[in-house]
Amino acid sequence: MLNVFLARWQFGITTVYHFLFVPLTIGLIILIAVMESMYVASGNDVYKRMTKFWGKLFLINFAVGVVTGIMQEFQFGMNWSSYSRFVGDVFGPPLAIEALAAFFLESTFVAVWLFGWDKLSPKVHVLAAWLVAFGVSLSAVWILAANAFMQEPVGYVLQHGRAEMNNFWALISNYQLWVEFPHVWFGALSTGAFFVTGVSAWYLVRKRDLEVFTRSFQIGVMFALVASVLTVVLGHEQAQHLMVAQPMKMAASEALWNTSAYHAPWSIFAVIDEARQVNPVDIKIPYVLSILAYNHPYGSVPGIHQIQALYQSRYGPGNYIPLVWVIYWSFRVMVLAGTLMILLALYGVILTLKNRISRHTTYLKWMVFAIALPYIGHTTGWIMTEMGRQPWVVMGLLKTNLGVSPTVTSAMVWTTLLGFSLIYLVMGLVDVYMFVHFIRKGPDLGEDPSEMDAKLTPALS
Image (cartoon, rainbow, N blue to C red):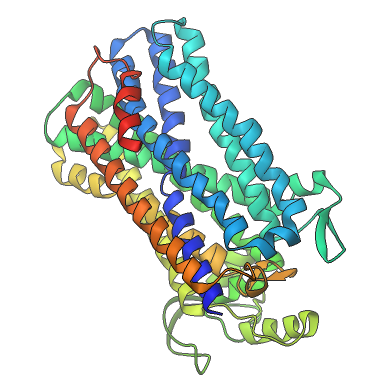
């Protein structure tokens, strides 16, 4: 069990760390492509300066994100070989397609975009930016296809003690995938938008490069509002699907120990006693949980005890209850982050439309710190998604404690856990240093983004 504990911590740390870079990569390249399209359409060099400036930061994030992603792959063979043997025939193809098709596509056109400023026509160059945006989004589809199978396994047959794919179409048309991907994608877009808005706010407070960063702020805050609203709306749809696919996760997110019939209340704040499986303090709003689950106020929401009994009859004796307090508070922190994002973006849009943004220095300072909000939302959302599925690594098929490598010792896992953490710490410091360096330097029309290659490669090496 110590091996399971350590292996889970290692995978959790590396996954959460890697996902700090993924949403910014997806969201930022879309905004860059929009800015360059505006440059091509208008011929205004301000948009060109914007594109090159944000392009530098994108390249830093992209490079570090690629390196952190490589380490993810090693763990399937290192610490989770039993899992890999059991579901490799299903889990492997989406990852292979992501690497051989989507990642190669985005990497190729990143190089075309990076080195093609003076070699390609403006229309071909902006097409390269859009193809990078398409490639990173396509990568997300295939990664989430693999994750969706873990959440809701489809398209497989159990043979020879393993899960083998028998329907590729079922895998890529998995309903879990198509409620999960839009939520993650718009969350990534909101990450890029808040990053652009926050960095632009930093410049506006200091009255530097006002023309570039006023327009950057305007574009960023518009995308931030739309993306944040759609992230919440699509997250609501995903939560409703949990009622069918993973009702235990839904019950745990509300610390709902017993079924609430017909007019389930939504818990605002609870003190959770997991040992006695009760909530000594639980402040609720009547009807709201039923509305969230079914879009009407009279739906019954099953409780943890009832689902536990159902799972025991279906899967055999065992504890099928996740850490309720983690799921409960992860969900609420995620919702709080999303709500603040919508409110801040809405206020920014109102100020922008009234042409008053430069007068509200306090708001601009808050927007610098608001860069963290999407990251908080992503992290807590993934904690809820992955820990809420426990004790399963593949829902209903393979328990987490049966997925670890049988011959790996605790000392080995400790070594890689500490080693990966140290490497990630160093890479994080390099990433922050590079970001701060280029943000402070500001946009420079005379500098080609391809110069980033000579500066970034030695740092990452």
